[in-house]
Amino acid sequence: MSLIKKEIKPRLTKNNPEFINSFIHEENRTDHPYKLALHTYNQLQETSQTREEAYVFMLEDIIFSSLYATFYEQLLFTIKENPEVGPELITVFQKDQEEREKIISGQTENHLAFVLNEGYCPGCTACENHGDVAELIALFHNGDFEFFKTLYLGMQTIQFAMEELIYDFAIEQTAWYDEFSPENVLEYRQRIIRYVENKKAC
Ligand SMILES: [Zn+2]
Image 1 (cartoon, rainbow, N blue to C red):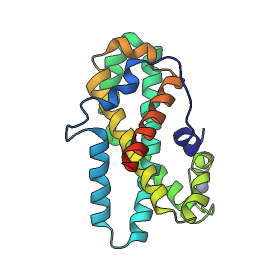
Image 2: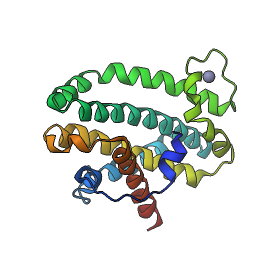
Image 3: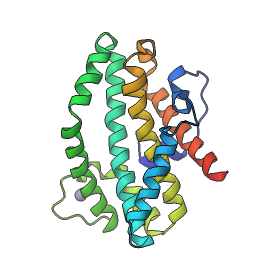
């Protein structure tokens, strides 16, 4: 499913697994996922020379966190299928961080060039996965800074929240493992996006 459809389309759900609202936990702490996302946004603004540069940096980070979230999702699905070794899977996943970030950085570079050059990507090695970012071409070239800011904050919050969900909560909350279905994880991500949209509207 494309990045935009995943994050923007709201949907209703009947069940409410506990992990879905775990990201709201102690909203006022300084390391809350949304606060961390705001912090990275401010840093990005400070390190950018121009608004155009900030706009490209946001796009790059959106792609990076989206790819990262996919790795987190795969881990959650694997835990659901193999709950008896869930904590071990998390430990192994954590050890692979450096290697994973190298892979994600490489893919991000390719996707970024693809979006910036409007689909032209000579020498690229990530073409089979451009489908997920193809919609960003039109959106990005529309120049809607606010739209991208919301998407940026949403994706950053998702990345921080999933990191916390896995390393701080799931490592102990083995009772949650059965709830890590694709539907529930999708709802979790969409709930974070709605949370960020509401925060921004305040
Ligand atoms: Zn390509």
